Length: 173
Image (cartoon, helix red, strand yellow):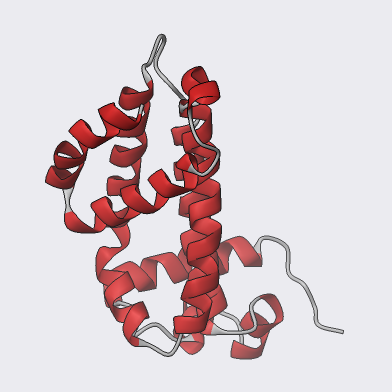
């Protein structure tokens, strides 16, 4: 049975994040994480079965924090303002990981990306549904996931894209 060291999982993720952002996905290895943590490579594998899973966990930690920030509406916030707030939070998250995602997407992780995308749309759809709650009786039940896909596409195209979407969003809402 592998020996589990207290706080090592957090150290692995912390060092992995630092390596990812300083050296990039292609240069990131389980060996580099192990060296940064002063443990054997096998010890890192006791916590994470692969490089992809370490990277996914680093991204997931930041995504969970972004989702929490999406839960904080301003007093009396209108649905369109809420969508703008969610969009801005997505932009911050996207900007943080844009370079990493380009390298990550070029690797052999396409099947994982599809599954992660579906989770992302579902989680984002829940946040959007909460923002749309005031107009829920008038909204289609598929609208939150539709808007989640729309906002994700807009984020990949830049901030100006949200301004272009605003007239359409006003009509939908």
